[in-house]
Amino acid sequence: MAEIFNGSVALLGGVGTSLGPTEWFTIDQERIDAFADATLDHQWIHVDPVAAAEGPFGATIAHGYLTMSLVNHFLPQLIEVRNISMGINYGVNKVRFPSPVPVGSRIRAAGAVSEVTEIPGGAQAVVTVTIEIEGGAKPAAIVETVSRFID
Image (cartoon, rainbow, N blue to C red; front, side):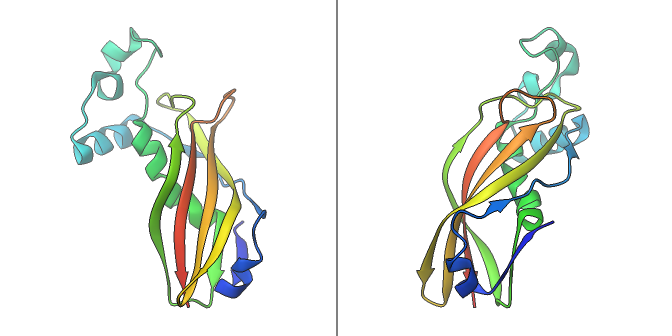
């Protein structure tokens, strides 16, 4: 269940708040293939199950940027800022992919509010999102995402 903040002013006091974890989400080959089509990245390690079975991971793996893009799926499960006119993605500060996500894996996210600053008309928040792989020793991704919440 998402951590709820009642407006951007409340968010200003939220630094250090732990978020999540979210529900598990399965990465299937259909999603990997759709991402490959959308980004024109058809590298064999992502889209060729036969070749990937002989590769270093024993199966196809999700694109790192696919894993990162799922932050947009996970963020509303982690944090909700109410009584604002809009929330927008402003960018990312840093992204790392410590471990590949093999097809069929289940992932979920947890996070923390790392930084909040006042901006004209609202607040800007940095949320560090860690995407874990079920049973994995290392995270799939760590993303410092930046969002703006406008009153």
